[in-house]
Amino acid sequence: MIKILGRADSINVRKLLWLCDELNISYEREDWGRGFQSTQETAFLKLNPNATIPVLIDEDFVLWQSNSIIRYLANQYNGQHLYPLDAKQRAEVDQWIDWQGIELNNSWTYALMHLVRHSPLHQDLERVEQSIQAWSKHMQILDQQLEKTGSYVTGQNFSLADIVIGLSVQRWYLTPFEKIDFPYVQNYYERLSQREAYLKWGNNGQN
Image 1 (cartoon, helix red, strand yellow):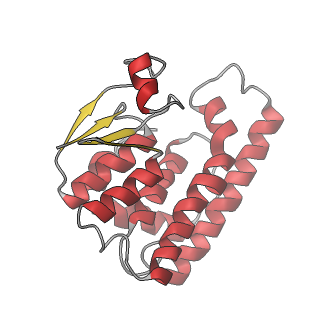
Image 2 (cartoon, rainbow, N blue to C red):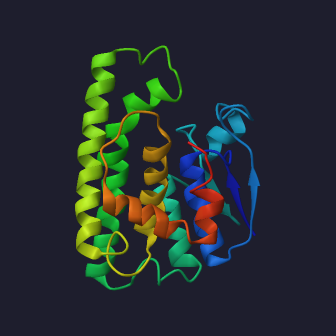
């Protein structure tokens, strides 16, 4: 049985938990991170010198970085229907996973830290507005993509890309600011919410 280190309300940990439910992978989870065991402890740093969650332990194999972990789990535990073997199809899934991690994630950081985390280090209102504008721009890109596919991020089939982006869509709707109406994103959110695992890990009020 695999072990997942990380608190269950972390968006990056929930990627793993959602995928495990989709693939019926049994796991144990230990609470690490904010409010729980410190990731600065020596034992944790030996597993992940970055002191971040999640960390996956699969027997003697240790892996960190959430997007790398979900790719591994799909490869190792019969998740090819979510992460295709075909090079072009897989590249498209990877493109959107990386877009979320690099482009979308970076756009929301300042706004989220101000509006949700109430960080004293993120009180510049001009930068908050810049973050909101950048976030909205990236959500428009997602809306346009979903208009093209009419279903999920890369096409008609649910994939790993939908796990990382589906959690991001939840974050968009839960963060309190006046939003542009993106109809295809809204339909996508409703479509994902028909999945039992998304109701548990994605459409659950956690931000």
